[in-house]
Structures are given as C-alpha cells and as structure tokens.
Amino acid sequence: MEKLKEKSPITVSSNLLKFKFPEMVLVPEGEFLMGTGDEQLQFLLWREEWATEWYEQDMFLTEQPQHKVNLPKYEIGRYPVTNSEYHLFVWSTGYRVPREWIGFHYSEGEASNPVVAVSQNDAQAYCKWVSEKIGSTYRLPTEAEWEHAARGNDCRIYPWGDEFDPWRCNTVESGKRGTTPVSEYSPSGDSPLGVSDMAGNVWEWTSSLLKPYPFIVGEDGKANGVDVYVVRGGSWYYSHKLARCAAREGARATFLSPNLGFRLARSI
Image (cartoon, rainbow, N blue to C red; front, side):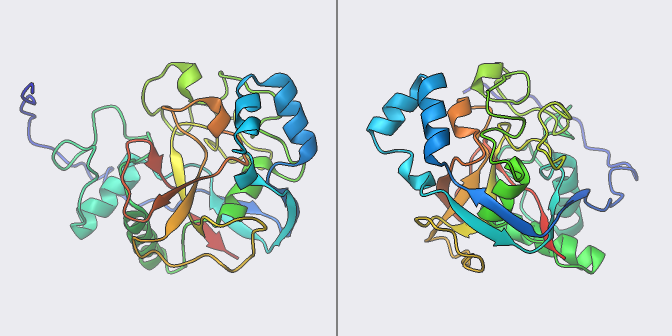
C-alpha cells in the first residue's frame, strides 16, 4: 500500500472554530402522499429502463402502498451537515473523527462537502451537541419528514419533478466520483420547499426503523446497533433510481460508509 504523504500541522483559525446556527427550512403542518403509487409506477415503467427489472423482482414493494401521512410543522436542515460543521463538533468535544478523514481533518477543499462515514450513533451525538449549544432540541428527521421535505405536496418522483436530470444532482450518472459541496446543485436541484441535496451526493440517516408501510407517526425507534434504520436520498456512488424521493434503504445504527451522512431536523 502506498504510504500516505506527511501533512503539515493543522492550523485552526478562529473563523473555523466559530459556531454557526444551522440553516433550517420550515415545513408547514399538513398531509402528503408517502411512497410510490400505481400511477407513478406506470410512469417509471414507461420512462425508465431499470424499472421493469425492479417491478419483476418486487423491489418497489418496500415503497408501497402509497398512503397519506399527516405531519405537524417542523424544520429540516437546508443542507446535510458538512465537514467543517462536524469538525467543530470533533474539535470542541474530543469526539472520534470520521473514518474517511486523514488524522484529525477532512480532505483539503472539502469543507462544504457533507460529512460521511458517520454512524447513526455519531449523528445522534452531533444532534445532542448542537442542541446543547443552542438550547433547543435538534434531532434526525423521521423518514416521513425527510420524504415530505424532498417532494412537497405534489408527490413528485425527484425533488425537481418527475423526469431525472443528471445536471440537478450528484449521482453516478453525473460522473463526479465523490461528494460535492452541498449547495453545488442549488437551486436547480432543490425541492419545492427549497431544501437542497436531497437527491444524490450522500445517503442520509433518519430516525425511523425500516418497517413495511404504512408509516405511523411517532414510531421512530431508538438506535441500539441491532435494528435497521431507514436511509434516504441515494448517493454519488449509486444510480438515480435510488435518488428518488420515495426510495428507501436500510442500515444498522453502527454502519459506516463513504456514501452516508445526515441532516438535522427540529420539532416546532
């Protein structure tokens, strides 16, 4: 294995260590359609070549049946938590650094990229730290909150509409081969509510257990490293079929991946 080049000592500026309030987007109280309905399934079978194989292998069933969910108003992070934001948390608390970092720092030029290789437990620790700093409770979004923020009230397939567009997000079709700054595809790739980076770039942790639908508000679960939790959004490493607003995958709370990060939420 090629030896890593020695890096000069890290100089931490006062600007880097300055805490900034998370930029949040208000999602009004209301009802939305969660999951993939029959009409959307027919559209995907007509427009997307991969959809036929998924349909024949019953892979859409995890997103069905489509059903109504009524959510109280809440806030969700406009962007995923970035490397620079997570670095301040690590520097302030002595918390362990993500596996993808070199030493105690993220790669040069990636301050605004989403932090990755963090478990759900790590994300929960970050939420607790931010809550203590601000005096208000921040947490991970439920998967219903995540999906509502991603697709709005018109049940669109991708945050910007029903047709995939590789110029609006960072999936394998975009050819980036790694994470990108969280605002790089904004506003063209934003959701109807102005939430960014919800298709591609990195998968995002939610607080919800991976269960069959319908989703039940209030059944979020508690991270213990055994149960499987929902992750949403797809990533730079995977195709756009997993970057759909309704696509669901799961991981244990201790799982680490260079494709997996998180964003904040807060009840109002």
